Image (cartoon, rainbow, N blue to C red; front, side, top):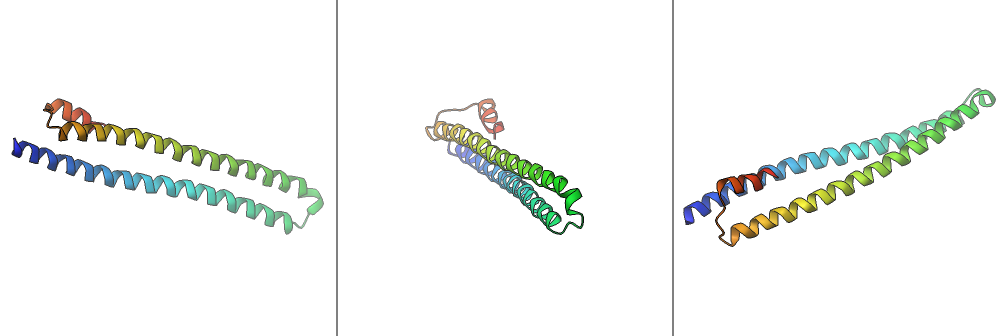
Length: 126
Protein backbone atom coordinates (compact mmCIF):
# COMPACT_ATOMS: atom_id res chain seq x y z
CA UNK A 1 0.00 0.00 0.00
CA UNK A 2 2.82 2.42 0.86
CA UNK A 3 4.59 1.82 -2.43
CA UNK A 4 1.40 2.53 -4.36
CA UNK A 5 0.83 5.71 -2.33
CA UNK A 6 4.46 6.76 -2.88
CA UNK A 7 4.17 6.25 -6.63
CA UNK A 8 0.89 8.11 -6.65
CA UNK A 9 2.43 10.98 -4.72
CA UNK A 10 5.40 11.16 -7.11
CA UNK A 11 3.10 11.14 -10.13
CA UNK A 12 0.90 13.84 -8.61
CA UNK A 13 3.95 15.94 -7.76
CA UNK A 14 5.32 15.62 -11.30
CA UNK A 15 1.96 16.57 -12.79
CA UNK A 16 1.74 19.52 -10.41
CA UNK A 17 5.19 20.78 -11.41
CA UNK A 18 4.39 20.50 -15.12
CA UNK A 19 1.03 22.22 -14.68
CA UNK A 20 2.65 24.97 -12.62
CA UNK A 21 5.24 25.63 -15.34
CA UNK A 22 2.54 25.78 -18.01
CA UNK A 23 0.39 28.03 -15.86
CA UNK A 24 3.22 30.49 -15.21
CA UNK A 25 4.23 30.60 -18.87
CA UNK A 26 0.67 31.19 -20.07
CA UNK A 27 -0.07 33.69 -17.29
CA UNK A 28 3.05 35.77 -17.99
CA UNK A 29 2.30 35.74 -21.71
CA UNK A 30 -1.31 36.76 -21.12
CA UNK A 31 -0.44 39.59 -18.74
CA UNK A 32 2.41 40.78 -20.98
CA UNK A 33 0.17 40.94 -24.04
CA UNK A 34 -2.57 42.76 -22.10
CA UNK A 35 -0.09 45.32 -20.82
CA UNK A 36 1.44 45.67 -24.28
CA UNK A 37 -1.96 46.42 -25.81
CA UNK A 38 -2.61 49.08 -23.16
CA UNK A 39 0.81 50.66 -23.72
CA UNK A 40 0.35 50.70 -27.50
CA UNK A 41 -3.06 52.33 -27.13
CA UNK A 42 -1.68 54.96 -24.75
CA UNK A 43 1.24 55.71 -27.07
CA UNK A 44 -1.18 56.05 -29.95
CA UNK A 45 -3.06 58.75 -28.01
CA UNK A 46 0.19 60.57 -27.28
CA UNK A 47 1.24 60.44 -30.93
CA UNK A 48 -2.16 61.77 -31.99
CA UNK A 49 -1.81 64.67 -29.58
CA UNK A 50 1.64 65.45 -31.00
CA UNK A 51 0.15 65.33 -34.50
CA UNK A 52 -2.48 67.85 -33.46
CA UNK A 53 0.11 70.12 -31.83
CA UNK A 54 2.62 70.13 -34.69
CA UNK A 55 0.13 70.10 -37.56
CA UNK A 56 1.20 72.41 -40.41
CA UNK A 57 -2.39 72.66 -41.71
CA UNK A 58 -4.32 73.21 -38.48
CA UNK A 59 -7.53 74.54 -39.99
CA UNK A 60 -7.99 71.82 -42.59
CA UNK A 61 -6.94 68.79 -40.54
CA UNK A 62 -7.86 69.70 -36.96
CA UNK A 63 -11.24 67.92 -37.07
CA UNK A 64 -9.63 64.79 -38.50
CA UNK A 65 -6.93 64.65 -35.81
CA UNK A 66 -9.44 65.28 -33.03
CA UNK A 67 -11.67 62.50 -34.40
CA UNK A 68 -8.67 60.13 -34.51
CA UNK A 69 -7.75 61.07 -30.93
CA UNK A 70 -11.32 60.46 -29.69
CA UNK A 71 -11.53 57.10 -31.48
CA UNK A 72 -8.18 56.09 -30.00
CA UNK A 73 -9.34 57.04 -26.49
CA UNK A 74 -12.47 54.92 -26.92
CA UNK A 75 -10.42 51.97 -28.22
CA UNK A 76 -7.99 52.29 -25.29
CA UNK A 77 -10.89 52.31 -22.85
CA UNK A 78 -12.40 49.19 -24.45
CA UNK A 79 -9.01 47.40 -24.40
CA UNK A 80 -8.55 48.21 -20.71
CA UNK A 81 -12.03 46.92 -19.85
CA UNK A 82 -11.41 43.79 -21.91
CA UNK A 83 -8.11 43.17 -20.11
CA UNK A 84 -9.82 43.61 -16.74
CA UNK A 85 -12.59 41.14 -17.60
CA UNK A 86 -10.12 38.63 -19.05
CA UNK A 87 -8.07 38.72 -15.85
CA UNK A 88 -11.24 38.37 -13.73
CA UNK A 89 -12.44 35.46 -15.86
CA UNK A 90 -9.07 33.69 -15.59
CA UNK A 91 -9.10 34.22 -11.83
CA UNK A 92 -12.52 32.59 -11.46
CA UNK A 93 -11.45 29.63 -13.62
CA UNK A 94 -8.35 29.14 -11.49
CA UNK A 95 -10.35 29.30 -8.26
CA UNK A 96 -12.66 26.59 -9.61
CA UNK A 97 -9.69 24.39 -10.57
CA UNK A 98 -8.09 24.92 -7.15
CA UNK A 99 -11.26 23.76 -5.40
CA UNK A 100 -11.43 20.66 -7.63
CA UNK A 101 -7.77 19.88 -6.95
CA UNK A 102 -8.23 20.34 -3.19
CA UNK A 103 -11.12 17.88 -3.35
CA UNK A 104 -8.88 15.38 -5.15
CA UNK A 105 -6.12 15.84 -2.56
CA UNK A 106 -8.63 15.31 0.24
CA UNK A 107 -9.83 12.07 -1.36
CA UNK A 108 -6.25 10.84 -1.78
CA UNK A 109 -5.25 11.77 1.78
CA UNK A 110 -8.29 10.05 3.24
CA UNK A 111 -6.80 6.86 1.76
CA UNK A 112 -9.91 6.29 -0.27
CA UNK A 113 -9.06 3.91 -3.08
CA UNK A 114 -9.16 5.60 -6.46
CA UNK A 115 -9.17 3.55 -9.59
CA UNK A 116 -6.68 4.46 -12.28
CA UNK A 117 -9.52 5.78 -14.45
CA UNK A 118 -10.83 8.03 -11.66
CA UNK A 119 -7.36 9.36 -10.94
CA UNK A 120 -6.63 9.96 -14.63
CA UNK A 121 -9.98 11.74 -15.06
CA UNK A 122 -9.22 14.05 -12.14
CA UNK A 123 -5.66 14.71 -13.35
CA UNK A 124 -6.76 15.37 -16.94
CA UNK A 125 -8.71 18.40 -15.73
CA UNK A 126 -5.42 20.11 -14.92
